[in-house]
Image (cartoon, rainbow, N blue to C red; front, side, top):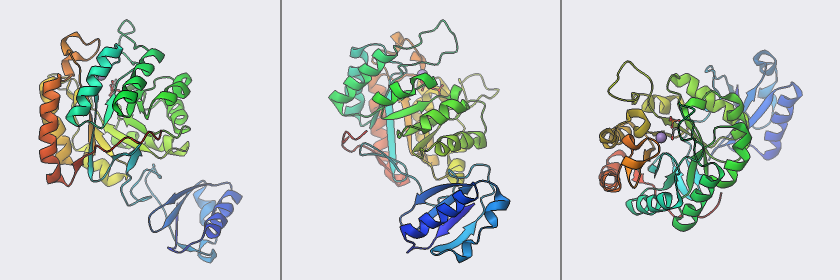
Length: 346
Ligand code: PEP
Ligand code: MN
């Protein structure tokens, strides 16, 4: 249930409603919009609906959210959420490109890539230090050393970093280095991990699982918000279909659909969706046209020698050419490429 407060409601009015909710064992989640404050009440619907909200000062009305996810739903918050990562925006009006290697291999590899993608117009550097690999024998990432390399690249280029955390035991460590914590497709329903990242104050990039429905993805986001963190960026990274020419199938319709259902920003991952370098540019454009707020793209100085996902990584010239096209096309979709100066606030 949502309790909508009047435009001029005071902190005392809001505090009073929260107190009453707590009094009946319900949780209260406050969302302060530009004009109005909305209090999300979670608990026994029957008991909550007995409270005399009409008589409470500052209350405008009460609305019931029928969807299984509440805080991430459009009903809960009508305006689009824009996430600010050290001055770089992700959401309405912006197309934010995150780029970098699939995995951190060496300082030189990450630094050269970071310099290049920044020059080409990317706003955020990606790179995996902990890699969730299908085979236990495949390269698992450099771990802490990888995080240090990413931090050094941020130090030099000013690009904030997004990197994956795969284990609840590493959340604190990864959060020390990362600007955005990535939850990979394979962990989308690792509810303990979702809760643990939700306890940090870091923005979270939540990838849709390759066998997950849109509703399941939104429920996963709800776990993170319930734990306390509402800075979530959803990512469509392709789902499993019968098609074998591509690694997965980019579910492009999920982009406008999620935007209808939720106020959270959505980006696309054409690298993991297609598994094919040649499809990255067209799929990124399709994402932009469908309303995505950005893309996460794998780029490698020498894709042929990449220790992971080389076949779906762009070489520098290809990435540069894609960024050139995006700069031209984005304004047609009321977006501009997010750049901005990283202000170091993490
Ligand atoms: C990645 O971004 O490197 C990754 C492993 O992606 P996904 O979780 O979407 O497979
Ligand atoms: Mn990858």
